[in-house]
Image 1 (cartoon, rainbow, N blue to C red):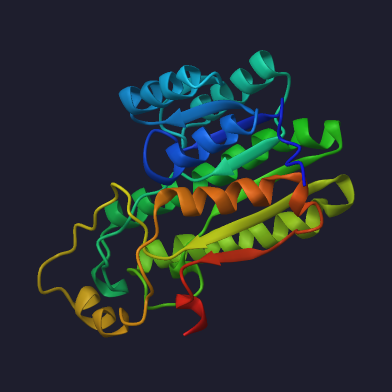
Image 2 (cartoon, helix red, strand yellow; image 1 turned 135 degrees about the vertical axis):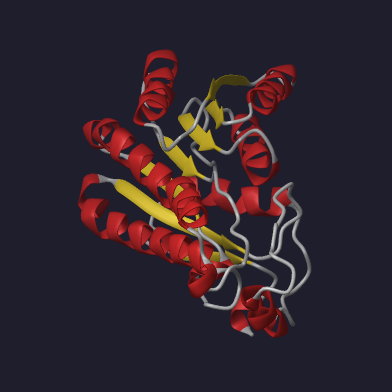
Length: 253
């Protein structure tokens, strides 16, 4: 089936590396025009060059996506350069320190919630008027195994990804009659540049480490990106409100 993505306007956040980069490149290969949004200026521009070198179309927007001004710039670029917003991929995220609730600092909590939840919400709110006016749109969020269970990360990350799951499902219900779909992937372990700066000997990592068994093999970023592109495509036209584990069966254990 034709993906229907040729000529579509797609925003991918966290697109300067890892899963976001793989998704941006894959959307462009399907003929989509891509806004590559990332905090890392060089990473974002490198991905744009990669896409353009392969004959695709992309533009970079650099900044903190929890800043409303940056969100407005991202959406403005998509609308002014590409004529609208057909697909939003909320992928940018940060890991916590695996901290247990009693040990989470204000800084850790606020940073993780700001990047993993507030930024996707702000971008979603900003693109919805354009999607609703067009009568169509697809939103794909990056949740996590930590959004399905309590044993995959610390308190801040787990709370943020559970919230992403809830936001995704609420969007699906709120706007299904207006032609806007919302789904999420829930990656298991994936080979990316994200690292975990856990406190040595802290209660959180020690408490959850016994559960890191039978987690399946570590995925490549392209495998996560392929699921994102599918959920955004016309092939998934009747898939709405789904949280799709991409985890080699970890969620089934």
